[in-house]
Image 1 (cartoon, rainbow, N blue to C red):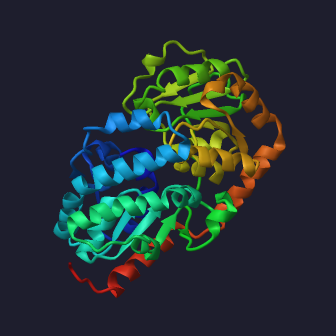
Image 2 (cartoon, rainbow, N blue to C red; image 1 turned 30 degrees about the vertical axis):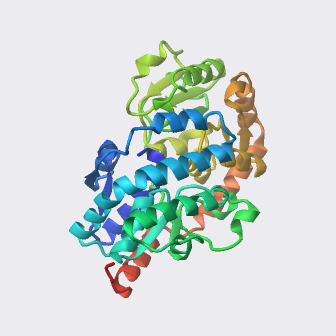
Image 3 (tube, helix red, strand yellow; image 1 turned 120 degrees about the vertical axis):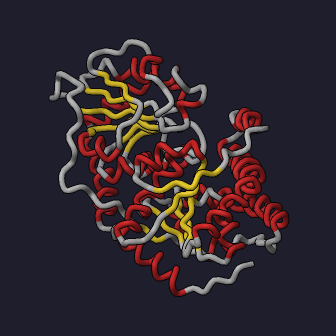
Amino acid sequence: MGAGHIGPMIPFAHALLRDNAEVLVAAPGSAAPMIVDAGLDHFPLPEPPQEGRAEIFAEARHMDWDDANRRVVSDMFIRMDAPANYPHVRCAIERFEADVVLFDIADFAASLAAEAAGVPAVSVAISLGLHMKTLGESIAEALDEVREQIGLAPDPELEYLSNAPSFTLLPEGLETPEALVGSQPIRFRVPEPAEPRPLPAWWRNTEWPLVYLTFGSVAPTMDFFPKLYREAIDALSVLPVRLLVTIGRDRDPAELGPVPPNVHVARWVPQADVMPHAAAMVCHGGSGTVNAGLAAGVPMAVVPLFADQPHNARRIAEIGAGVEIAPDAMVHLADAVRALLAVPSYRRAAGRIAEETRALPTVDTAAQILRDLAYNQPRSVA
């Protein structure tokens, strides 16, 4: 389970702890480093089934973006992962005597287990509404197959998911107009630290602007590494910038070979520490990364690789907060970053999203909503 799924959950978990609630995170054992770093208790789940996984990803790489997402979500996340994880998640709910379940919208096992156990549940949307709308029909079809396996009634209109409360850290300004039709998640923001933490003295020239390069936590585990990273470093290191590159916890910076003195490569740096210092960002378009950048008013060049990233890249360009670069067009990356640094309109557009984000209630408000939901809804175990 990557940072794009766990990361958006952590601020809500911390808000619950500040509200004196008990929090247990049920997630695969491979997620332990992120959960432990966040200071949260971990209920380890088995790793997702691996048989057939590589084949699905390989087929998806040759499909249209939306067809690829339907294939991965319906056949992998739902038909493969949900039945395998369901009994373990339900065990966690019942052993922990959970009063409420907060789940990543792509964790279908958690949604099904909460429903079967009669425990109120709230989803956390980790992508823009348009992405989920394009997947709705295929999700409903696959979920009904799993619901039949575990003894739940069919839900062809996804009424359970649609009627349950939903939280998100993504501001409305990022959504497309068509995604705003119908039910909407409750939007929150992460409280900003009183003072940004300084970055280590990785560069001698501290006058040059900082450009942050990240392709998330999943891309480094795929064949995008190291070629895509090396291409980006070679393109950007010739600019008068300080370039910070993060490559994920499972990779060694030495795998990228020598880098110029204006480049620093790290496995992982908290994005909250980087964003206050960044003048521009190059990223894959993951929703969490996009949201963190725009919440800080940072314009970005987006190189979409898979999942919801093409939708996010397109939307960033539409609102004027950045540019989209195809993975096979990295030759244009340096010019894109020059524009982000030189053309004020990009930063102004990103700044408008930052202002909208600052106007949202903090996640501490979400904690009270969850507390009210837990104590006001009686449990009826199926």
